[in-house]
Image (cartoon, rainbow, N blue to C red; front, side, top):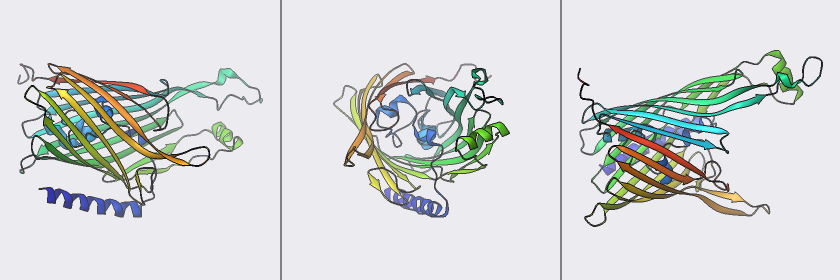
Length: 365
């Protein structure tokens, strides 16, 4: 079984390398790389091999087969830069039967009430503050996922289709579409393996700009280029993961951990291993818990190299801490982490909730 997973990984990497050579790489749809769920943040976003709840539609859709209740709901809200930017996530997963499940998710990352000063100076050359309006810039993703167990015991396969909508006030908007593919193999109660291929088809965003003549003049007068309609490309990313879990005694106490390696295909990045076109970004997390009641987490992510004023360099990383509590189908997760640059000195608190719902008694009716 392990040999088959290695072969599949090699095939995917080969195809991603061909795409990376044939397409011009661009950073795009970065809001879809932030992660979801305070549980994952506390683990340094190393959850691809272990995830088995509603958040699996983002991390690894193959993990949706772990949804055993009739439905699961997950919600998260977090804020960037002292509340200027808001990041929201909502997902619902449903167990069709004991072999298959589906999920629907929604993500929004947005900045609201941005001042529009393009009309600050009127036709007479005078400053008129009454001409200042406001607009919002938002990135939206709608995700639909399906997963099913395969004939090989412990092996499941899942896929996600993403529709992406991005809007900057009345000035610009874009639509995009992409596919994710995930594989999960639970060898036994102690070891799980996962493979996640994000944007395996490459995700294309078609941008359309609508700028009136006066706005175009402001662009020219301020030395800015007038944007043109075009495509943004999100190249594939492959994530390899392995997780483990062991009981500590016979009183419900357990400990576990996971290691994930992100392999990007859009050229040299500031990661632990920098290559072209592939760069490798490892991150890992550990956890210890008591039954399903409480869990303490910690993780390391974003291992990067930074420069001092004197141009000397040093290595830095992002620490993450987390706590989860659960009771009778309700879970509350908390993470203490950094949002943004790994060398930033500000931290944030992230909360998320999960609900596990039993099948209603009148569902058949």
